[in-house]
Length: 266
Image 1 (cartoon, rainbow, N blue to C red):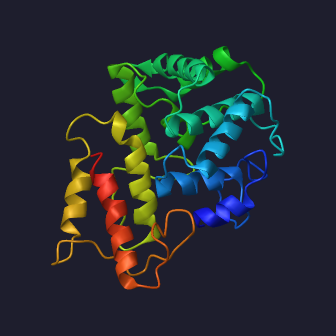
Image 2: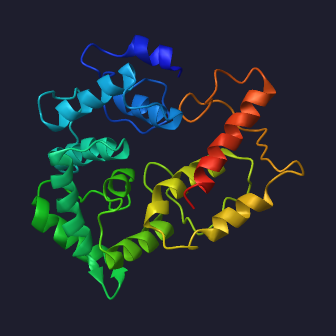
Image 3: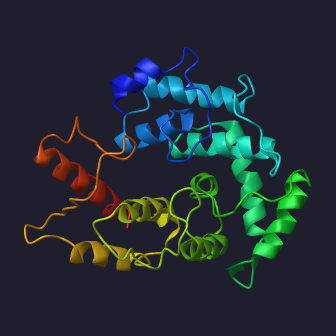
């Protein structure tokens, strides 16, 4: 999706119709637009980005009710607040309600640490104490939203324990496999998803803890010193970062830009 396409598809209120969708279907949603804008790394002052983030802020403030179907299996109100706050935090928007939600989830996660490890059973208990018994199940602590919301707010002990937990579980909606296990095939969509997950969890890592990822990337450089991934196709979300991939050099530049953005946070 090009920025011109997003501008044309954006509703007057700043949204893109249904909000929540991390799936691979083709229908555009506000969340897909946010993902695309994040990967394009466009300044928050850009009219399309600003309008969309203002929309998310109004959703968090309940000035706008999203048209999504409310799921009953979880506490949808809590989920919405987490979702909106996480996106605003990912785009580095300072907001009082985002901070309030960060503190709630920070308490839940920190109270779920036993003997230096994240205790899922304790998490379920702490979750219910904080958010009540509405919903059949708890919101997953390994979700994309949780990882994005809690960056730089956990105590050192909780940060380390949460990091190890996520590394073993993966990030729900992004790459829900053990992150200590490298993708078997470098030139694959799995590698792209894996590297997105690594980029998101990297702020929780201690120095050198993700060196194995850096070494893997170094080992997969070509003889020219760059990276080539012939099997990767443009998906409209992560790629292309350039205008298009009709020229091979555009694809090569985009792949290398993406991988270097991951290395920069390791």
